[in-house]
Image 1 (tube, rainbow, N blue to C red):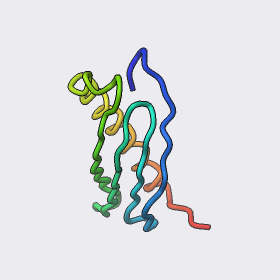
Image 2: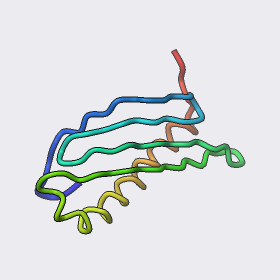
Image 3: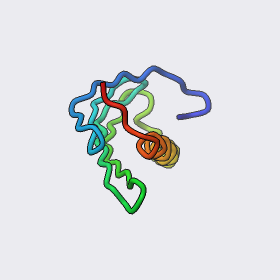
Image 4: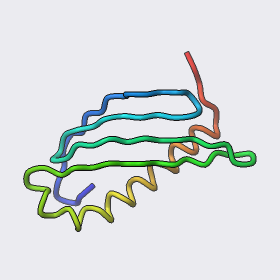
Length: 93
């Protein structure tokens, strides 16, 4: 996320409805929060929607305003990756 700050982020899936929604709680690397994805059919494709809550801790707290634009960019990249997977087919065990 940041050029000089690296860390591990652990996630726990809290809700999964294949092809419809995915939610997870995460923590680590000076932050914690919740991600909620909704996948809406749109024509022949998918419209992914992401809602995210992030709380910064420790050393990252004073840099929150600088981190936010970087995090938004990463979230957009993640949504594009998810969209590609969904449109390529959602495999279920």
